[in-house]
Image (cartoon, rainbow, N blue to C red):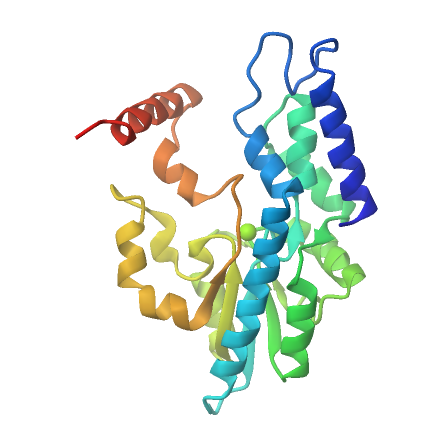
Length: 267
Ligand SMILES: [Mg+2]
């Protein structure tokens, strides 16, 4: 764990501990913690999440080597997402909680401009290993084109292989990554993908439907096992949209309330 990350955790715990005597955005007197607080702390501070990343990248090595053993005419490539896959933005989430604000494009851009996100456990060693095995590495991210230079700077400073403008494929006009994956697949064999969202594997997971996507896992089971590794992200993602919808805050709260009632209904 980096010193910077340790300091942020210590600072957050300090505020939580003294919230009875000092009003903060985390827990003003008499108020509940922000709904995202525990998810963000779990992501940032838990040994469980640290280990899940280690575990995921260990599995990625096994799958990569197995897939490389199957011959193919095209040069191999590994495709990874960036946010919460190779770079850790949980300090940004904690800063938001402390400041009593939510995500906004402006504060997010200020965060990415700092180019100071740490590498997630196992990510760097895995991608260096992939490069040693002869794979190209592509970073397909929904950061904006305006964020590409700072993202390249951040990845390069950490030593990520092939982290240049040709290999960091930003959002352009769509968050759908299908066309960017196809552009890589035009002259490579994608042997493995790693992401924190199922849409990092296939856009079909964008709309989860009534069963929140569980049925789609069954339909895509073989392909997911073969070429995809998922890393944890408790704080945001399409999984949450599937429950809350994308309406106003009041509409989302109402949907969550109905969801809670359904999930706790006794047979
Ligand atoms: Mg991501």
